[in-house]
Length: 150
Image 1 (tube, one colour):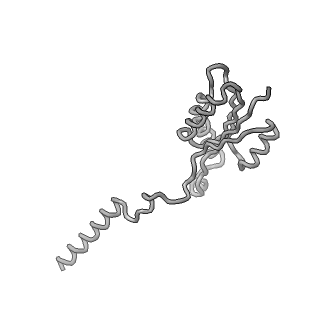
Image 2: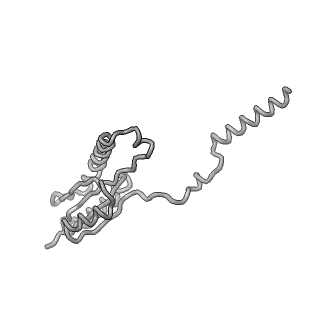
Image 3: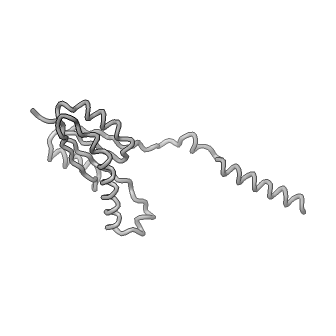
């Protein structure tokens, strides 16, 4: 019997845990092979100027270890230990996917990454937040006080 192989892209444990738990219970009888691929957040250009390549790699490794420690137990089923392979994506995902398909044959890909927001939320669309409103009122009061003293 061929065991199904799942490649699961993850970047946030809190977002991925419910999906992984439901997948693990759904496919428990087939004892699938799980390939957890951690997709580390991008390092900003400013941070990359000051951090060495080695320190960035160490940070990515520590980040992935924490993520895997939170996610791997959710894939363990009660009947048999799960076959979980943990990978840190160090190349573009399409290239990594083709390499994994060559190594493991037919796979099913599950994207459990937190979705990126393209549209601003209504809260981000507000022009003035509470701090901006207070600063504006303070400027208005200072201007009014200056006008009355002159």
